[in-house]
Amino acid sequence: MCPKEDIGSHFGTVYAIGNIAALVVQLCFSIFAAGFPKYRIHWILLALPLAVALSSLFFIIAPILLAASLLKISDSTFAYSVNQTGRETLYNPLSRQEKYVARAFVEVFIQRTGKVVALLIAFLVPMFLNTRNEAGQLETSLLGLQLLGGFTCIIFAIWFYCVKIVGRKFESLEREQQQTTGTALGQAQEQPSAGTA
Image (cartoon, rainbow, N blue to C red; front, side):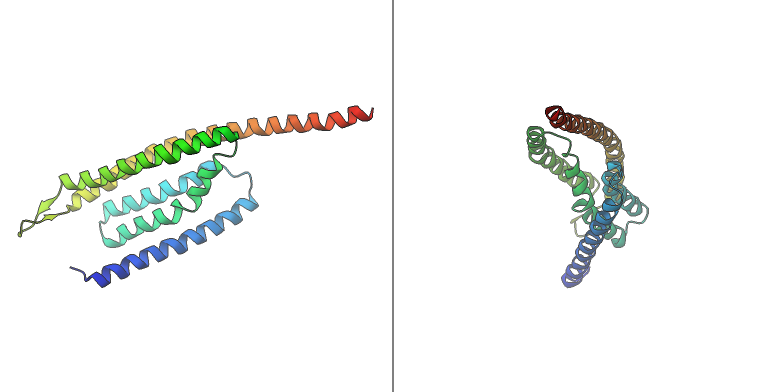
């Protein structure tokens, strides 16, 4: 057993690395986005699931503390930096009313439901595969944690598919918005010239 001080120190290091990595990733993304304003939203939305899926595969292959720590770091690095920015960008082509309704639905229903389902899965999968030690206490099974990692990879495969659909829809809405804006600007420029004639 590790002393509580060692566990606390390890978690502190993991969270510090995650926060510093999130800052670096966000700064690099901001520089990239300024240089390439026409980037595809797909790549931004795929950063988090790709990082977590690779970390989960590493944990399945080598279920050690380093792999679990890498999983946490990859999640905290991308979840509140690039992934958050990408999700916020998806609201841009929508009208004010559509943004209000979509945000309310996603933040109140989807995110909370997703967290409850994730907690249930994280609790139930290892619980059914727990073992008892010589003292009769429950111990989390390594196989259960590896199965949870495999299930995470399946979820992220579905996530990849959803990102593809959402990315296409976003680009379609953005093109429509640009055409509408271009038409409105053209009409606005024609009106003054018609008035001077």
